Length: 173
Image (cartoon, rainbow, N blue to C red; front, side):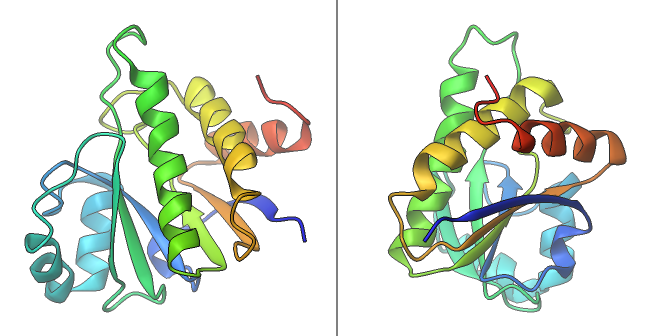
């Protein structure tokens, strides 16, 4: 069975999926943007659980329960700060998507939603980040038969248009 990939404009904290992915900072203790919104919506138990994880390296991912969210779990991943693209940012960003999918597969999750990792305060250009996101997810989900649907949750209409265009093509590169 082939995994369905879709994009929508929504508040990721409202999605009733098996897991939402958090564009976290390396402390995993909350921050701004998506990270702050997820922590606020999940409540203090998420912060308490994150304190036990010992942080997370850029490009890696860790799983917690969803606590007060409609999603059962949160997969926290730390994207790279954009420094022009010559300091390993594309590889680290791809690793965020790959590791998140691997965790979802390992835990038998069927539906997950990603934000546009690193495109907020970390400054990754949205077009380049979207190519990496769509390509990496397409190349990784087939290794995990339990994953039925991946949603790319967009903050803006402009971001949504980029995701929709790239999802319509066979190869977004």
